Length: 142
Image 1 (tube, rainbow, N blue to C red):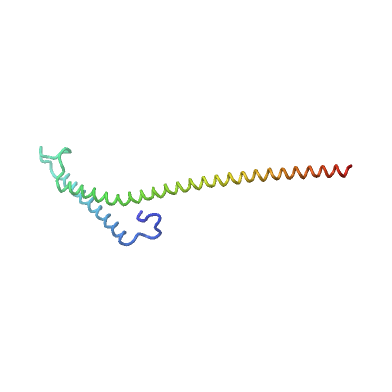
Image 2 (image 1 turned 30 degrees about the vertical axis):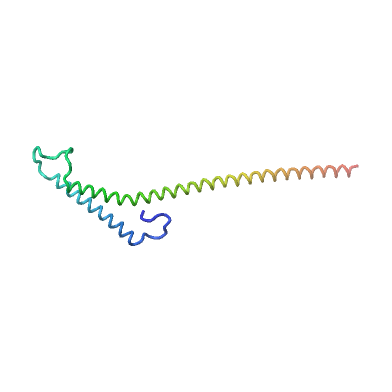
């Protein structure tokens, strides 16, 4: 999702380069983190000085973790911003559809009232014509 729905063209070259560079940085950071983690796990246990879960990470490992977290937040930040803009756009579309639905209901109600009025008028005209016919027949029969 590099482009917002309002954009019709592909993302610009600098934007694509920035995204590609950010992805490459994340991948490199993850690779470094995994290498450091594997190297740490391969070290022989050194008796009581073996670090456990309660000890702090080594500065280089902590820096790598912070770097990876920072990279992930930067990459995720762009996606989150796009998701938030899509949610905002969908909410505005929902409001528009709701308003249009209400307008259509008003139009249908107006047409129904107009149809009922036309039917009443037609009945009145038909009744009047029937009365005129009866009176005309009565006049001829006299």
